[in-house]
Length: 77
Image (cartoon, rainbow, N blue to C red; front, top):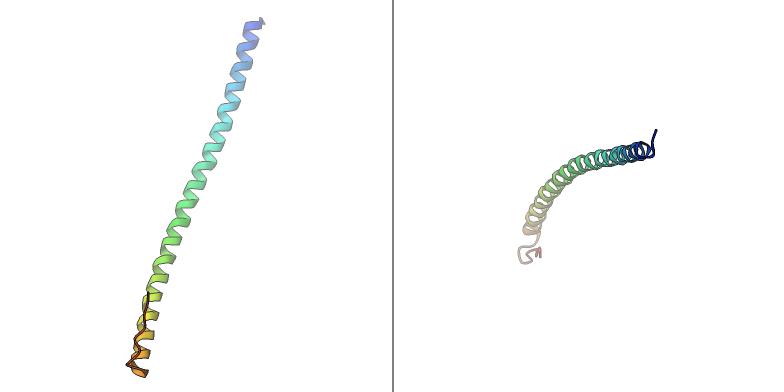
């Protein structure tokens, strides 16, 4: 085997190794982005539920304060 063939085979092996490492990290990156999308949708759902719960609690509190004291409106700023 000549020196040129040895150099080319080492360069080819190095390139293959680097490409496989890049492919592995890209696979991990894709998995993480999919997991983040799932978590983001869960967070959005929780936010919507909390918003609805806050509106309900505000309505209940305003109804209760109107029945007990009609001169003091609640301020929600």
